[in-house]
Image (cartoon, rainbow, N blue to C red; front, side, top):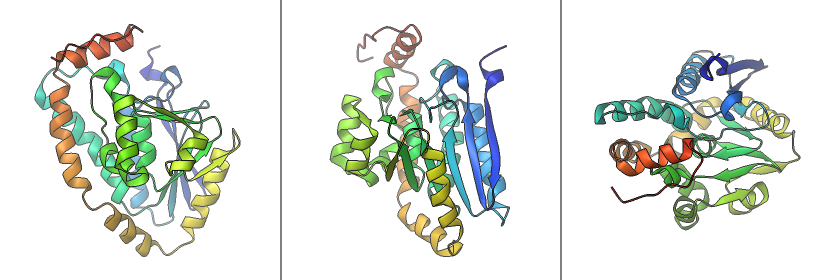
Length: 258
């Protein structure tokens, strides 16, 4: 059985709250393209169901998301790279500026594209064992999925710059201190706490929350368009190919600036 055969997005209802659980055990819930598509479809369906008033996003197996699925990043030309980004950005737009409030329940790793997902949510609840990091540069890419827009909005450009350039990983306590995480709870309790917050949001008037999300997301479209152009260019560089091969080969990359 292939790794992707074990990949799924679980959907469960808790009253007016929809719980989405990334379940890709072979790769610590890495955000493969099928998972991104499944998440987009689930959120689109939720928007059409007035009985759903809030969403919780979490990961199975003690981790939120270990980043993008690097094994699936075999982009052959510029058009393929731009299409990959277009599909991913549809999900980001729906999370950041869509009508439904979203709470992230983070246990374990929340890095790379996983950090992008968490920062696209309205609230981040972190377990004490959570680890936050960007790390895109380690494979020759820039931060994406809206992270250059959403992370500085949370922690300021200076701190975001350090995380991006130095691949800094933060503990849950440090993430809360700088505003990256909104609450820290004991290990194993992130989902329960996130559900409690989502139930509160589900009881609020939906229109003001939707309009608040929309105004806070102003500027996202421009950031995503720049990201789509820049990242699709980086997909075709020698440094990205080296970074990908080094990651899959579990060795240090040797970047040449090409």
